Image (spheres, rainbow over the protein chains, first blue to last red):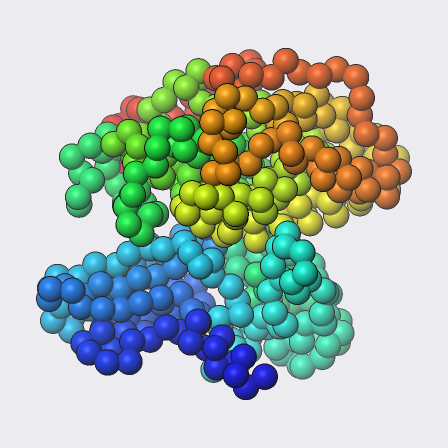
Length: 181
Length: 271
C-alpha cells in the first residue's frame, strides 16, 4: 500500500529533482486555481513538468476538464509568476495525456478543500469503459459543514465543471462536492 | 504567437501546437476523421448552450451548461488537431466553414424541442460517444487516443445524466411520459446514420473506430435503460442521413448562422 501511494504521488506530482527546473517548478507551484482559490495547481496535479531549455522556462500543465475555462487563467498566472521571478522568456504548454484524475489531488489539498467548505473527492476514479479496473460506486459524501454522512446529491453538475451539488440532510446546508473523475 | 500568420480570427484560442506535444501534423485522413468528431461535439455544444436560463430548473441550467462546456472542450481539441493538417486554427474551422463543409451527424443539429426531446438527443449521443471514445483510447494515433481518454471520463457523466432523466420522465407523470415518448420518436430516426461505415473510416484502420462496431453495445445499453423505463425502442422511419458528407437537415443553417455571425461580422475581433 505504501509503495502504491508513493508511485501515485510521483505520477501526480512529477517534480524535477535537480537543476533549475526545481526552481521553476516551485515558482509555478504557487499558482492557485482561480475557481477554487485554496488549491495550488500542484495540489491539483495540474502541474506536469518544469524545466529550463536554453534559458527559457518551460512549464507544462494539463486541463482538469476538457472545457475548463480556468486553464487560460492558470496559464497567464504561471507566466506572470515566472516573469516576476526574472524569467523574461517563458512558455506554458498544455498536454492532454495522461488524462487528469482527481486521484492526483494531494492529501493536503483535500484537507484545504474541506476546510474551505467543499467536500473533497472520495475514493478512486473508475477507468471509464475499461473492463477489469475499478468501477464507480456511489459512496457517502461527508458534509464539510457538520461532518454528517447523511447527504443527498441534488445535481451531478455544479458551479464549475469539477463539482456536484449536494445538500446535507442533518444540517440542511447545501454544499459543493469535488466529484471523482 | 507562432501561428499568427495563418489565423483568420485572432484571440486567445487554443492553438494546435498545444494539443500535440510534438506538434505533429495529422495525415489528411486522420484530420478528416477528427473533423467529424469535433463537429459532432461543437454543434451539440451550441445546441445545449441555448438551455442556459431556460431549463425547467436551475440545476438543469447548470447541468446542460456544464455538458455543453465539456463538449466544447472536446470540439476544441479535435478541431485544433484537424486544423493543423491544413495550416488553419480551430476558429477558422468553427466560424469560417459553410454548411456543406460541416460533417457532424444530423442528430446533433436537431432542434432542442422541449426538455424531453433534448434529453432524448442526449441519451442517444452520450451513449454513442461513450462507446466510441472508450474504444478510441486504443487508437494508433496518439493524439486521438489522448483526446478520447480525457473525453470518455466526462461523457460517462453525460450518459448518467441522460439515463436518469429518461427514467424520471418516462416513469414520472402521464405528461412527462408522453413527452419522453414523443422526444424519442423525434430523435430516433437519426440513430441509424451514426453507425454507418464508409471509405474514410476503412482507410484509417486502427487509428479510427468503425461506427458499425458500436451498434451492438449501444443497442444493449440503451435497450436496458428503455426497458427499465418501460419504453419501446422506437421503430419505423429512418432518416436518410448524410451528415458525414455535408448533407444537413433544414434546421442546421439557421443554427450555424447564429453561431458564426459574430466572428464573420467582426473578423479579428478580440475580447
